[in-house]
Image 1 (cartoon, one colour):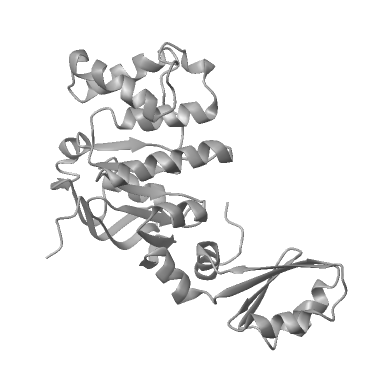
Image 2: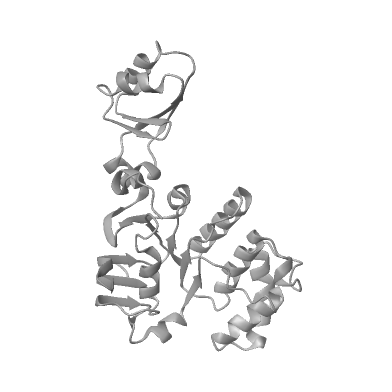
Length: 306
């Protein structure tokens, strides 16, 4: 028998006006698991998180968070989880340490309990030596790391992370990934929304592709890739891409065009490579393994979302 879930959602529906933004959603987050929600803008990811936290009420369905029925017992449930929102919510009038202290007090913790935790959290966030710095002196990456440390001040079992690395440079993203992996290794659970498919592949044991409020498919990243994508993907651009499209169309499993780039999906890459050799040298060809971004685009389409 599987261990009880920290978060379990069944048949979740949320309407705004005449639109259903979440449509019969089921999801489950177990202990020590990172569960990813990926989908285009407007897919319902942030609305789902707000529903799970009891910040808005569902039209139908059930939510159980940390053993509490939501929204009826949402306040009690939120005391046992940590949240990092998309946008910076640090208090600019406080220093780094003061932000952690004030936030910890919201959870009923006293300064005598909080102060011993702060050095380790600042070290975790790579903010050692910044304890007295005003928030205005921190870079964007520092602020995101402080937001993560703040969400951990009361030692929650489950973290809700809504696009935690958006806007960060590669060094900052990789540092946050490392820290999140250490949390998972310590037995904490994460519900993650992200637009970075490599982030979802690296961190998540299971991923759900969400679009128009519907869970299109769910599974381990490797399983989703195997289910929805051919083993090899060719990306082609430059001189001769139109001719390449004509040559590859009968040989590849799928050929798709996005702007000036051609994507050819192949089960037999050698066959496509042989066909490409006679084409003019200005054609640029990259052959790579299928990945979660290919799955995302196949299930949700290449059309731009605003």
